[in-house]
Image (cartoon, rainbow, N blue to C red):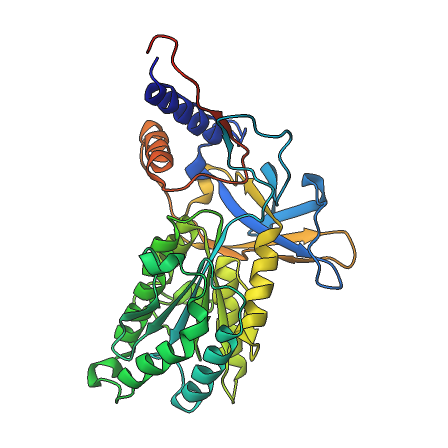
Length: 381
């Protein structure tokens, strides 16, 4: 068999193994709820020894059984690589990609100048800009790249050394009045959510954990006039389900950062809720260097958890998730809500879509150790 044919068979086998890792009976990948959990001790250091039995999970108040549990952290190779051998498990830190979105559209004008200078100064002091990207959300609601994902410049680890000049140039270009049409709050919501989803879709092609650090003064939303509401904006606002499902499918956490000089309880609560909807964390007034350090710490040691809530779970409603740990002095960070979007495709179609997604993904899962060797085919000269 030719090398290419061997590789294709190996990929198919690996994809099948990935699909079978959650051993719940009659459960497919699309029927499972995925959580990424970070745990830190009282001093803020990652907890590296959690076991499946340490965690208790409830969904809408109902206890859930974990069907798959994996610790994601760097690990040394079990044996040295031989000649022509390769592995994705090098013992280095797990890959982690972060986008900073400086949101001019929703940033209060009095805070914009201060946030701009804080961002530039903090980024310029970073030792490396590796796997870090920067965009502006303009007053027109468009994404303006300062250091974009997927370009040749994305490999430049020194880009932050000149970021203040780049930001100054971009901010001067954006120093004009807000367009009249952007006084329509529903349009602002659409533009903001599309920007977050666009960045999440681009991050999805990168390996490891993915985070958006969103510098903003608030979470824009508009109420759905056609649906009776007995909850908060997450349950009752337009377009939030689509945003939630997209971020969940792309496995991207949103971490809002507020530099507002006059924070309100409502603003803080709303930003905390969007963080809890995605498994992120809300920061208030902290330097970007500090935020990046904390986000990277959570990415370096985390736990992937899947549970099967049952077929009747998928009711097109938001569900509240609670993850608890009996061990004292340990804090848990995990997604607190998700939108139970029903996938009504036949089971073979779901399995095929999962396999296609594995084949088309530009990166593998570095948390799963793979070793490969290149050997000469005996039948070839």
